[in-house]
Image (cartoon, rainbow, N blue to C red; front, top):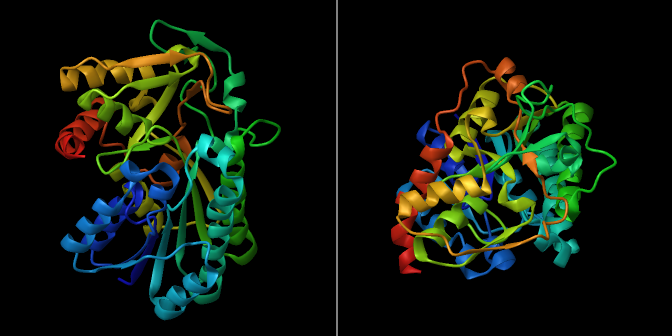
Length: 355
């Protein structure tokens, strides 16, 4: 069935992709140099997940390569050539706050790294399918201009509003504040589209909501659900940034996202963009997530609140899944927010207490 090349292979989405595509008989090559440790410190390291993949999956090869190094990337693509039938690009610098502290690293990882992978695909395996894990942050803070309603535990939008079902791909990505992270992901997202339209490569940018699951090495600056559950379970203080803790995200389990990737791989299109997340079936506010986490752990979360929201952050974001579902009607969500949080807690509590 060919080779699946997966960047960020020891991370949340990458490792889920490794397990799935190896299970259907593909040889999987993973590219990951544990930059999460560089970004966020030791607790965010994905080394534990890489070791588990190497131990448990026979048809997996790991390459400790930096996606910013085109010569190393080119060598891998040259070696496998046209045997590569799928590229899943999940490697990224994923944090608003971190990007502002080191814009050069953020941009070169997110934008230049994506360009390297696209160009190598064009040169050595142009018939392969290229899937990019983009982000809802490409819309910047435009969603914050929606007429939101404050409820007891969340911000919401009126059921009569055209965006009640979620934010569609037609929302503008222009004339708004993105954060530097959002800007670097916009650059990558547009490059993925352009290599599709200009060179005919079968590409897709999946603009994710909150991507989550039990393999997330959550930290304060990224992976809020996993980090929130972890803080609740081990008694670590937690800070809520702005919006009264009522900010809403839709949350998609990593396995549901990979199932969407698989549908696209089986029947690919050129230069597509999809908003992908939990939609109306799986979403929560910060306060609602805290409530669920406290029930799971039997502990109260020690949290504080600051009025200063993170720059460019969304108050309310739910993905409209209609476009993807119309193209791939066999796909549907298997996990809701309660199931996601339960799995994160049950799989992580022992590991967290050992750290």
